[in-house]
Length: 134
Image (cartoon, rainbow, N blue to C red; front, side):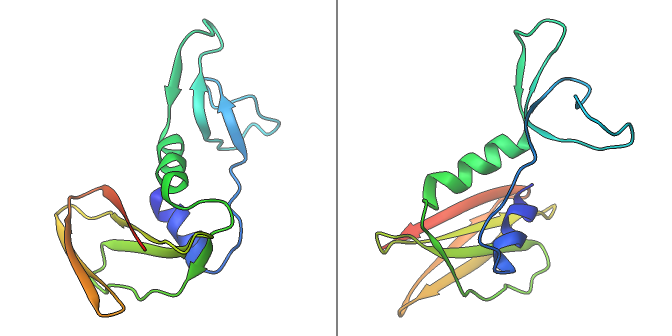
């Protein structure tokens, strides 16, 4: 989910749409029998008291905490390591945020350089981090 949520704005899209907010344990309801649906949350239809928060829920939460409404995608370079995806934004208040996801099986160290300042960060496998600065 993080890879997709990074790839969409990296290709300069201005919006990201999740088709389903809540689905049942069978990923329904659906109009198409061969449809693969994914809900942000899963609510059991037989008990209605069991809610599971899915990967999409946490990915949305991660982005929305640091990338606020009105943020604009800003150019950033790729790392070339093959297991890091990233996308950078400038928020309306002038802060910058970069979301980085390590989809590899090992820790990966990367560097962010901005206006002569730099930070080096080691990201665990299958983990995401957001760095935010003024």
